[in-house]
Image (tube, rainbow, N blue to C red; front, side, top):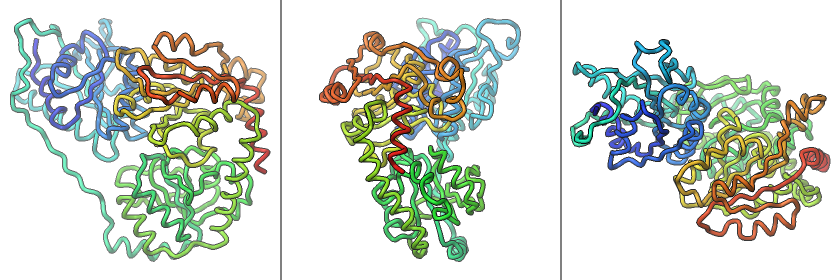
Length: 555
């Protein structure tokens, strides 16, 4: 049976330019699936594993900067979206999550594939909507149209994020042979027009007066997409010695003018010489625990810049929420701020420069392991490759190594290991450039269903650091000192990627020393009709020793 409001939902998405749809197979979702799949302007893909499907959609939306639609059947299928929904919520990535459901009267009646789906994503969703379950009255049709428009608009409004439409459906689910889908019926589309928040002249005068009371200013950009205009503004502020710019790799704003080695720098320098009296931040989270603890202990005031919405008190000193566009505020800073404290500025930048040289020398001198392997691999990754980093050690290793030319992407909204493969695969669906994923073995094997579908991703390149364990736990004081480390924290495993490579048609390379790694990298980035995976084999115990040796060489 054809349900016209579902056809209208697909049509509204198409008219709003939301034209990428990730479908997971099911029977109760059939009317929704067909409404999207038969629309001539929508691009639908089928991904069977809902957890992978949701992270693939996230990886696409991250790059497209517009919502991707997810559709699944009723029951636990909807729960499998939850990790990616939470990641999208904290990373502010727009998703439109559509779940089929039983009608309300059948909930809690032991009917098949039935759970409590309304508000299933709790507080990790911008808004939940429940579609009408019948359309016998014209107001029900109006309500369905309203939900369709609101969901599309809300997912994209600042801060972007996931929205959920739960759709109760009754049998029959499938149209008869002679029923036709009509996408030509006029549908009401609610246009959303937004404007960037601009600070008034009065607000700027007040801020200018207050800025003069600060002598040591640090600007900390959080996770965000690359932005050439912001990079230029920050570089100009740094070159004018107006503030210290401290950047993680996930900020995508590192340069020769920013402090890039703070993870190693902060433990080595007298903290009093580094302490700011004002922290200015924008963007989302940062990686460095050392930096977060240092800024919390500094007792500095903290101003955060964003276009609107809630502001977290990450450094426990939040004193101003400034609602405006970041470029306007940075231009204001550059125009009106004098030089920061000379001693403060030189301490930061001299230490950063010394560490840069020490790090390069130390890397040349350490033994081969996963850290040395990443150092060598990064030299070969094309500048235009998107660089995805799995959580745990992969992102930390790259953060230790300073500025990158590539766009850095990492699921730091929730910092889980569960969807890094799938997010990278989603990225490959949006670009013809190389997409490189650097990942550890636990994250990689945990998300192997990312490759279980029928769509090409021959531009994907995976660097797999396989030490047969969760090596990060050897570097954390707590678990590393426990007798149960290997069994209950590292969770040692003996999986190799070679069989997976055969299953999913990857070209497979392996390396256990520098010579094998260099040989494998010779043609790793040559174009091919198959994706490629390079498995770097090492030992967890030795990797921990190498990193400790490396850190000692910096003192």
